[in-house]
Length: 402
Ligand code: CTP
Image 1 (cartoon, protein in one colour):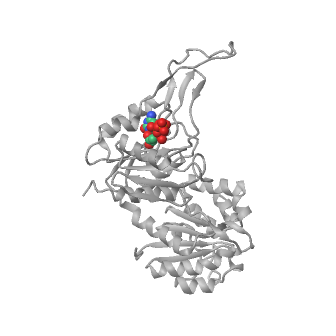
Image 2 (tube, helix red, strand yellow):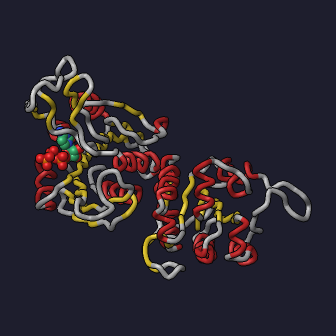
Image 3 (cartoon, rainbow, N blue to C red):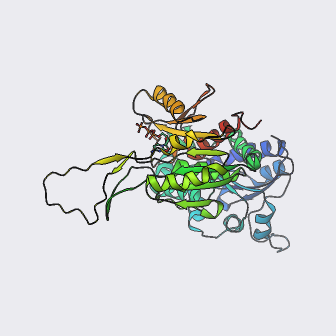
């Protein structure tokens, strides 16, 4: 995709991967973008501003004041100028500053004042990358709504091999292009997403539930919103930090409540994504008082919960698209395809339970997509944001709107 007219602020920080910023700048400029580079002081140890200024065709900025004139490099204006703020490579140090909102150089000041979307490509050694402090800072940035282009695996500058390498410039360019392309390809579409777990009360203080964190559903909701859709989220209780203003947000607790809200919204939406991990069974009776531990053995009768996707699948209009999820531990593909048919889905996303780094609670996933039209698409292990984008790209090619 041509990036003509797109204004990109490119932040470059102190990492051995800073040399790749030269190639990235060239790719962005060749695609037609205007690129303004801001370097952190430590980036100067890895690449010269002359190289980046020559490639970007603009002076590189790094100080609050222009040396010669004492004139101000206005960080607020820079933040307003840009359509996208891309930081590549993002070092552990600058990541920590962004996560904490600290501001001691031009780059972090522009970050705090930027109103445009932010995309970051971290780069560091594998042990640094895996450190819980770094991972939690990356999660924090994702929680702010930023797109994290997760490091790739391979040989690192330290000689070690593992995840930590900055995403290759060609891949970063792909994300930038899909960011701009995707800005409004779902504009005018209304989307309903069920997500998170449901909690089924046993007594006033206890419940039955599951490990769903809501991360995959949230990534899909974010992606739809980013790509212009009006998004209705019906979410079970989740612990994620969410900017709910972007969505029509409905918090529910039990499967019955989720169904009630979803059934009201269903007739007015074009697309439904059933990403919730609905508890299949609920206690047949909710004890009015806390159950006391009087007996050695107790049994709880469970009743089957409403199958939200199945019920709404029966009401699906010809121009609606239904997307479901499946989590299987055996005969994965066959079970997923059976669910696709039974629940009248157009597309089903099979979550891997066997791959490390995929599934509940983690930020990455690996999926297999099966379509009612016979399509079958396999993803690599990737961030849930990347998987969400893949799912939307597949939804776009289901031919019900043409
Ligand atoms: N689903 C739903 N309501 C339910 C159960 C599931 O809407 N009561 C939806 C899920 O959101 C998902 C799909 O149906 O999109 C498949 O869910 P899954 O739990 O894999 O399948 P189940 O139908 O519950 O079958 P089983 O647990 O027996 O594998």
